Image 1 (cartoon, rainbow, N blue to C red):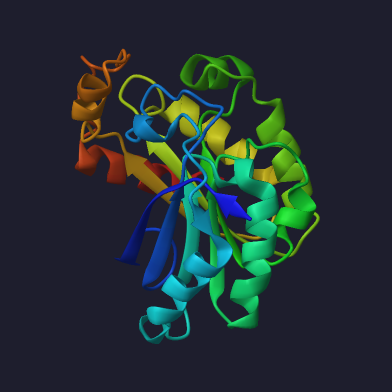
Image 2: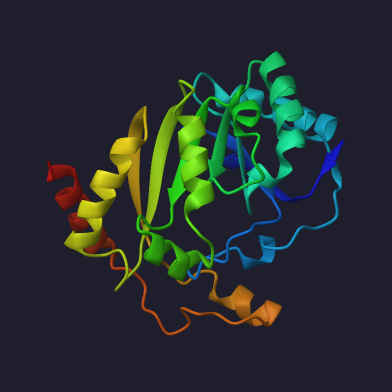
Amino acid sequence: MKASIETIETLGLVDGPGIRTVLFFSGCKLRCKYCHNPELWNMKNQDKTIDEVVNKAKRYKPYYKNIGGVTLSGGEPLLHGDFIIELSKKLKEENINIALDTSGVGNGNYLNILENIDIVLLDIKHVTREGYKEITGNDIDESLKFITELNKLNKRVWIRQVIVPGITDNIEYIKLLKQFLKQVKNIEKIEFLPYHKLGDKKYIELQINNPYQDKKEMDIDNCRKLFEEFTNLQ
């Protein structure tokens, strides 16, 4: 069995707890206007085997210690469900922690995919139907279905919310976010990620339209202040 994995990053520090090996799967159903990895939208050739990935992860196992491990990212790893199910079994045999970085929009079979996952990094695109559609080009229903399935399992959850100027950087939105997250069980961490422009060159290189070409980056200090307001909300 093979999967389309664009890159494998070793010694990653921002994709889950501890030091991690990060697999960037290609393919994604969403077209988020603030996406900084548009090169991963389309599915590429399936060129990586499970044994290749497991052997790579095992080489870096000494760095993981008790909290690190492997993170399945993308693109959208849920589009590679059968591969992830088998890969996760192999990684568990090696006692390697597994994180799933996802928007929750795949092809179903979520309970089986999540069975051997230790922690889910759940990307929240927007919490209203209209806002979600505007940002991603898709309906919110599939991500809500994923949350329903996720709630059936006792998995650790980290929430990630990109803060975009003029979109999610206001008190009205974070109040809605606070309410929305009450439906997600086992949240142990929430992160506000300031929108940045690091992916702009990729749009030019790929010759595709960048809908946020003229949008300014989110001020980091203002992002921190907004998070403080969020944490103080009842």
